Structure formats: C-alpha cells, structure tokens
Image 1 (spheres, rainbow, N blue to C red):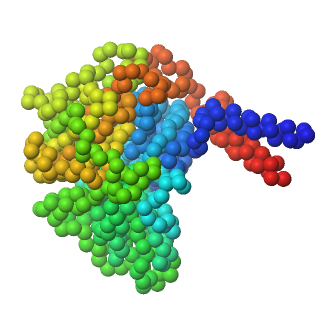
Image 2: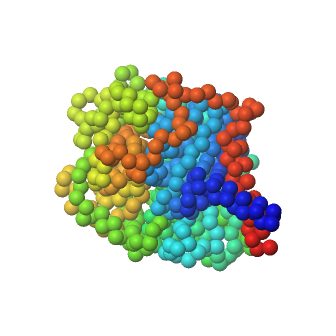
Image 3: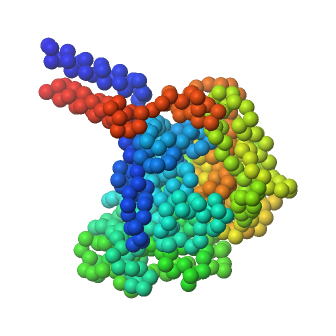
Length: 594
C-alpha cells in the first residue's frame, strides 16, 4: 500500500511539474555554454565561438508544437544574443534574440530562452546575432520534425545529415568588426568551411597540408536527407555532390515540388533539404563542393569548400578535378531562373493536415505596400553605413518591445517611409507600422552590385516574383499567385527586385534584415511593429519573468551572480528538473506494469 501511494504521489507531482508549463505539448531542454575555442579550420590558429565545446554547435532536434527551453551561459568576454532563424515564435517576440526585442546577455551571465515551435516543420539554424559573432561560429542546426499524424511527402530516408557551408576569414570577428568600423571592406574571404572544417586537399597548391576536412560516411544504395545551411558572412555558394543528384524536398519549413538538381545556389542565410541516393559505384570517394558565386573565378579559386562523401565499401580516395559549377559570371539569369523553379508542393501537408495550397495567398487583398531599396554603402555623419530607403538603422540602448512595455517614449519613431526617400540618408531607429491581420507586400529593390539576402523574423513569406530592373506597379503582372515558395529568407540579385507577400498575424516587433553580416552590421535592417488593438494574452505572450533590462530601464535589472558562484544557476535547475521528471515517470511506469 505504501509503495502504491508513493507511486501515485510521484505521478501527481509529475503532473504538477508538467502542468506549470503546458498541459499537452512535450518539452525539450538544452544547456548551451557559449565560449571561445582555439581552432585552425584553414590551417591558421584562431579563436572561434563554440557551444558546449562544439564547433558547429549541437543540433536542436524537436517535433512540431514542442516547447523548447534553452539555457544559454555566456562565457564570452562580450554581450551575447542568440537568434533562432526561421523559428516563428508565435505570439512571443520576447524570445527572438535580436536587439529590437532583447537586452544582451552580459558576459558571465546566463539567460533561459523558452519558445514553442508552433505549427512548424523544417530545417533552420541558430546563431549569435550581435557584432559579427556569427563570423566566428556559434551556429548550429534546428530540425523540426512532423508529428506522426501528418504525412511527409516522401519516404523515410535512411539517415539525416546536417551540413553547414559558409565563407570564412582567418581574422576573428572583432578584427572584422573593427575593419567595418574603420570604413573598410572585408575583402575576399580566406576560404569556405563545411561543418566547421577546411577543404579536402584536392589541389596541393591551393590547399596546404594538414587541414582537417569533413567526411560524410554513407552506405551504398541508401537515401539520405541532407539539410544544408549557408551560415557564412556574405558569399553566395553553389553546392554540388560529384556524380549525385540533389532531389530538393524542403526549404525553411515548406515542402517543395520535388525536382533534381545537379547543383544549387544557396545564398547567405538560406536552408534547403535534399534527398541524395547513394547510387554510384564505390570505385572511389566523391567530392562535395561549395564554391563562391558571382565572382571572378580565377581570383576566388581558393574560396571553395570541399568535403568527402565516403561509401562504406569505397576502394579509393576522391581524385581528379572538382565537378564543374555553373559558368555564368556575366549572365545572372541562370541563377534567377533556378530560384524561380523552386515552388511549393501544394498537394502536401506541412505542420497541419490542410494542404499548403489552400492558403490561396494570391486572392488575398494587399493592405500595405513597402518598397525597400538598398544602395552601396554611403558615408553618414563621417561613418560608412548601409541603408534601406535612405535610412540606416541604429539600435537604441533600450529594445523597442521593452520600451513599449514600459511606455517609454522617444526610443523609436513609427515613420519608416513606404518608398525610398529622395533626401540625404540618415541614421535613425525608424520602424514600420504594420497592420494587425493585414496583408503586406514588400518589394526588395537591390541597387547594389552584389547579391543580398533578406530575412524576416517571426514569419514565413511567399516569394511571388523576382526580375532584373526597377520594380514598377506593372511588375505585379509577373507574380506567381499560386505556388510561390513560402520561406523566411530570399535572395535579391544586384540590379534586380524580389517581391514577397506576408500575412501580419503574429503580434510583436519583428526584424527584417540583410543576412549578409557586413551589410546588416552597417545598418541595413528595419523592424515591423504589429499590434493587436485589443490587448490579449491570446495574441501576445506577457513579458517573461526573467527579462533582462538595459538602456533607460537598466535600474530594473536585478544582479545576477556570475557562473561558477555557489548559487545554483537556472541551467542546473532545468537540468535537474528534467532529469527528475524523467526518473519519476520511469519509476511510475515500472510500478504500473510490475
């Protein structure tokens, strides 16, 4: 009787613990210790940013509607924020991890993020959002799986592989930051990393000896899902696997029309999923290549990442020239045509059982139109800056959402222009006033000479059109109003425009930014404010209990003991709590089935 009462009491306590958080959806707990680590990815020793001593960081692997709790310990020597690129944070911009919504985590402090991957599936990644820190690492993958009741539009693969590609400098992020502050360009990268490692030595002149390279081990005849993320600084990359087809199936939360590519351009900040079948013979290993795009290839030859695809029965090393990429340095239409070939699979479900095509976005009336034009960097008040519509965003010391919560005036202005300004450029914290439940059309007009990619936090948007030249009202006749791909990051080619449509149903302040780190750092971003006129916890979560305070509200911040103190940190509490709950449920199940 006593034993049975103990089991019952344990079950009641377990229910209480879960009930404090959620009555239905599971929780996943992670501890991230963000610190420096010495590494030599391109043969030059340097300081990289690691998570739990890993570079790249650990994978967050969860399922639709799960709650995610991540305690971040900042062991760097400077403030830190982590943003969860592509995770929509429904009703909860407090967890977005950018300066418009969060005060930075001071060095030596920890802070716990908690959010739900509500009605989402797909391949995303996280990274540090401040001061070019992503140029030193600190990134990792986010995989959101379908619930078992929702069909996936392809057979279950035999394995799941995450591949990070990105340009890399041998200078650390603080040196790159100083160069930008001094008005300089970053110049040509020193190479391309694949999963944090340098290139395989396919060429003894270009690649020095002793560099550690990535090897992906596979079994012949099996099919693997490759989730590929361009986590680089500013370089568009072309991905290809020697003698293998890339069957595109998903991008940033949307199942796509399934079509084979021999190679695909992946721009900064973008993520794709491919199915790759190991259908070649095993006479040798095969090259996996990521090379720079839209550059003078003869000068940029060393900016190439090379990994090895190794069959378990391989008889030799990869050899010979790398597989050719597209040769269109003077003709950009090839890449644009490829981008336009990526469409939504309207016959499949996503996170919910309704077909994706039922959104019928093409029949929704547009309520707001913004043309966001960027130009090459300009000098404003003696500083080299980048702009959108003539405004270079400067983050105020007090986050925008925090200022609203405490009714602090004068932090920002709601006057961002709907069209490019004719007057001189200026630095400001100017915000777009979005209409709740409105349908916004955003046209990104790239008047610069390099490819830019743009990302919107909190949302996925429909990419409905892109073309060279200046956008006009007549350009709408070219829009795809049925199966344009829904994603959160889109490329805009130089001298061209890209149009997206987005339904503003997610309350909060949401960052729209260039994903190219140098452009973003110099001011090419804006926030969209979306407010429900009827205040309700159903459309926006309240400010979290552990909110950090800074700027005009810094007097509200309670001191936090640095890590390593005798007090128990929230990370250890989470760790102990999750382990205790698991043990309780295990003991209960043993008792029930005994």
